[in-house]
Image (cartoon, rainbow, N blue to C red):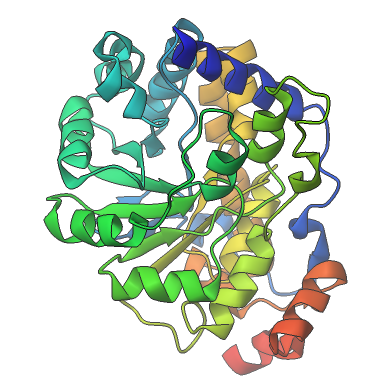
Length: 365
């Protein structure tokens, strides 16, 4: 099956990218100013966060990755077992393939089979209908839906769509017609403040900016091409990083002190370790999605290793909160952060003064 072959290519190329560091990672532009006497007792720290109707044990989740092949089933089984053991939410990969080729459904339904009581999110592309959205939610008995925007990927994909004109209207239909919450996300090219505003006006209440710096689907799709003159390598690294998106979201009042309390922003894209989680939350994200970093563990080491990694991440996030004096993840928004490099230039060009972010602890005291 050609589609399954494409999915296998995605897994292989995404895994290979984990061993090829991105040329630019926005998280490296963010420095948390250390205050040596700010720390509190780790026992006083609560790492849980509220996202929509859910309470998550920690401010991170396993975001959508794969499905549709035997390899994908192995990965999803390992991830589902690990998230069931730890209580961390998990999103599936795009289930559109299972709507078109029902024989691939077991590679997705294995998630709910292995994690019958946890928070599971289905995943589908924004070009799909409300009926399709309902079908994928039903297939997984899902608690919510990830609805992904991937126009850059579709543009480079040899068999991709080139018509994105109906997407916003379809998003609005799904947001109003689905019985479970939706999280609209990019696939690694970022959501601008303008896009976040459009989503909020369309009835969306949760969005994951999903910036660049992690798995690069433009590069993946270009690597699947025949080469020669048919080349899109100039789009490698295209888009805005999660850090840049969170800065832009602040400009649009989607995060920060003047943010709408009914609109929740998540972040993902190139999250390598718990400090990147903490940096994201300090910049305004409610929680953080992790994909590629977990993919490598699930693919090569299996469920037990993945469970250990999730447990370590939860503990490390709590330890970092204690070190920074943040009793809750929300309190990280009062930590002092320094914005440097390309992210600082991005903020300057967008008209955002980031100097105030370096003095936030004074406001909290």
